Image (cartoon, rainbow over all chains, first blue to last red; front, side, top):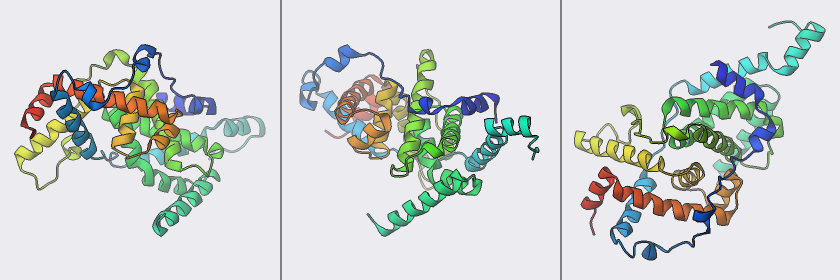
Length: 100
Length: 201
């Protein structure tokens, strides 16, 4: 497991998890009224076909599979977390908890 | 709900509870159950296989270390999706300057074609795959997440809102605008323009 991954994992708190990637301020765009497809394509009819093509392309796109042995790698990383969790480190330090 | 769905849910719940007790084999089953959708979300968001693998792995590690705080009444996959989305959005913001994704094409093994396809069909499929990623790369991270959850997972507005900790109306608005942005970008993209020209009226 790379060091950076270890760092992220150990330092992740619930507040990190719950902290939503807050929407950035884009108030001007958000304030604009929503246009129907026809209004949107009023000046350029090609856009109407483009919308259909977007739906077709994205609607038919397939899932990309996880790489081989992904689950095994995760389990190895989990084992390493368990070995180095703050509680285990505390136990090792203060009550001579044996190393595995 | 189908009986098999119910059984899967029950099995999933048992694995979650066992994982909370430190059973790594049970957690491994959870990873196998959800790795595909989680990796796909990360890949579609980040458009980079290495980063996607890292993000997917990080998702499972964060989930594992916070399992005791997971609400068992909530769908486990939705919870994982939230972690992946947030992590990917943050990561995208950190690399904002590299957004000009002259996109990394999918490896041949994961391209959207089957073994039986003719070479020409395979090339077209690969082109479309690259186009999709290029268009996604044009969207702001929150819009991108909403689009991926909508098209790939067929999530409802309510489900997307739950994953992104947003409201249904905000999600609806994002999807609406994102779709129109995608259409504009598609017209401006050479591959997109060519596909449009081939499209029947």
